[in-house]
Length: 381
Image (cartoon, rainbow, N blue to C red; front, side, top):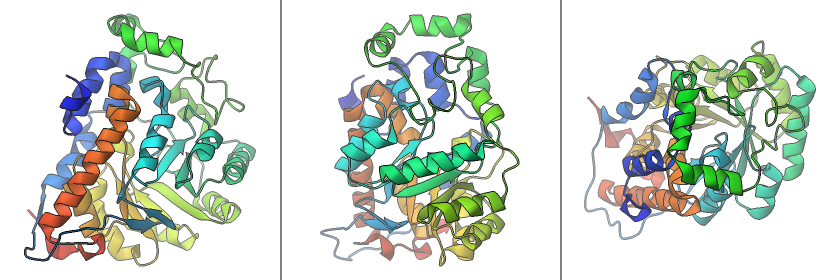
């Protein structure tokens, strides 16, 4: 299978599986506990049907949206995800370049493998910085100041990860940073020598957002220990309100799932919320973001930008979310599989296909702009 043979999400996943060592593929692919929520995220869209209109004059369509003060040429963006240079040596550089080509936003994670400053200098499009709340409050303030100085457009605080999810696939292989693999994991790397060659012949793996604060590269801290030991489970709404005031710009919370929490986000001055269960990687049994979308939009959609992520695999999924009231959607695994499979050309192919699907879906739905979508277009089974 080659990149040109990839026509959808599942094709990219298959190609990534062929090219990645098992422990790394399973890190991307897996969820928490029994992976019920991971499966539910995509299945939630299948319970919703589109009702198209015809004869509406759709020779040209406009796919642009405005979200958290940023104008995007397409209604989806590349959510910040960790460890990207582990999946392919180009990592965030490939994702940022592909996002720029399609005029959309991309995110840099606290656990990113390219510095937010380098990416900000290379691309002028909207950039979001995703970070976690640490026990060291000085570290939190330093990270925000650094993002402000770099010119980051949107600050995104992840609020559903005060402790790490139970990702049993990783436990079985011994996946961690740095590698502390068991025999089964080592064997998986041995049978994928091309990945090892790429990893060893390119710049040394690092976490530039954290390297000066946390010993994760050459020391003993794994990803799970980072979540368990560095992050602050005592974080409260008062702590976040202080950060929103300090940032004094576009600030969103990622991981909101209840109406009450959405209302609190409005009260403390956030400009956006992202409905998310962390791709099914944290609380297994959590509801799908798409299933929570309508009630949260009804409660706060006129006061704050409501976004969702989780399970997006098709352009029709994007249109369903926007019909329910989301301003945009985030994608994660949707671009990570093509990144792992083929680097920048893979991400560009995936984003291009999603754009084409959105455009085709708009024409078949009988709309020329995305704000023409509404719940009139939907029926739930």
